[in-house]
Length: 76
Image (tube, rainbow, N blue to C red; front, side):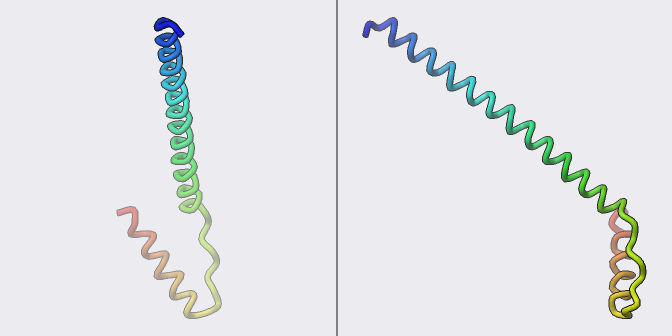
């Protein structure tokens, strides 16, 4: 192999590698953005869900009231 073909091979390999890494970087960036958006959407869905009806069980009812009080203080 003459030196010009070796240089061409090295240059093409490095360009191919850099392009591959760039594509992987963009794909991961997009996936992370979608994952973050899905987490925000899930958190908002939990906040927006209607409260469950008051329980007949006294201990559970106390726990529900205590948890509802905590949720009310989280936003402050």
